[in-house]
Amino acid sequence: MQAWGDITKLAVPIKQGLAFIKASLYSSWSADYKVWRNSFLRNRLRICLWISLGVVLTVILLTLGTGTLNQELTRSKLLIDLVVGLCLFTCLALLKTPLAYRFPGLLFLCFSLSVILVPQVGTALLGIATPNVFTWTFAFLTQATIMPVRWPLHLLSQLSAPMFYLGVNAAFNLKVDRQIYSDVEMNLYLFWFCFICNLSVFLYERLQRSEFIARREIEVAYQKLELERKKTERLLLNILPKAIADRLKQEEHTIADQFPEATVLFADVVGFTQLSSQISAAELVVLLNSLFSMFDELAEQHGVEKIKTIGDAYMVVAGLPTPRSDHAHAIANLAIDMQKAVERFNAELNQSLSIRIGINTGPVVAGVIGLKRFIYDLWGDTVNIASRMESQGIAGVIQVSEATYECLKEQYLFQKRGIIQVKGKGEMTTYLLTGKQSLPAISSLPS
Image: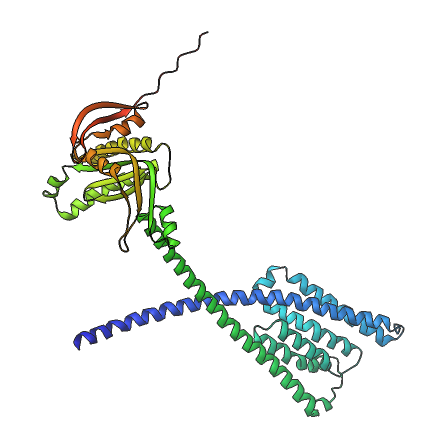
């Protein structure tokens, strides 16, 4: 019970930490949502302005088509429509300025003023005191359906209509028709119309915010999934060649390929067993890791495939899984560089290690077997001989079989070791690889 109590106490700060992380994410997402909302408002406001301009243009054309321009009232209404259109064009121009990006709500109110206040001032100049309920409701409906965000702006726009009506008429000393306040049916219509518009905007924005945060959560989850996939991919490529990993991902359960020619190298660290009795296990692993990491870099540099490490032995192959004609040359170059790497390793860490290397060329079978902890491995007589070339070789020397010698004798230097007794194979002629042949000097052309 005491242990359970300790676990419970430990769970409290963990939950608090998770809650803090979640709150921080939601706070960040809320800020991102506000940026998205302002961008949405700007884009939809542009649509509203063009629609309103279309409406104003329609009214102007209708007025011009009536043929009553000789009447003063008609001319005055035409002038009001032209001023409204000019205001709307001004709002469109302001949408392209930094003001629209910093204060999109201000342009929203400018749009509302253009279609509500400007006509009210114009009609007041004509001495007309009646409110234009049709214009108000049309403007409110357009705003609520095309720009359904930031409902307080919609409410402010709706409240401004009667306030402008009273304020403008008071400013011009016009008589306000009191019947407007006593018309219960019209007032209820305006109230419920505005209420439904505001409720619609409020619910839409609430839904949009939830969807925005949900999309962000999905994006974060996808990013985490993609990160884990890349980690798994890197881990898989550290175990298997890419071509083999791709085949396994396609659910190819058994992989076994015959390669008519490849070159296999085995290397063993001489003196490592004695060293293991002189230093701690941790230091031993660090040393071996440092040396084999150097070998890994060389294998990647020469384009050969590391197969595995067995204790202090190192195995690589060239010519598979992607065949190449210069497989023997790649392994020979790697072997020479591995010897140089051991010399650098000894100089840097004050050690006296050496490696024994064996190489053989021939046909091999390569593939992946098993269900757990599988590796890409090689089988065949070529592999066994390469292992014997190493185990029965000489410390600090690269011993190759006659098959490898035949592939390399034109470009590399060899010393014939002679015939040795190879376990399981009997007598075999072997050679010691000592280096590359230098390029012949180019003679000068006769003058």
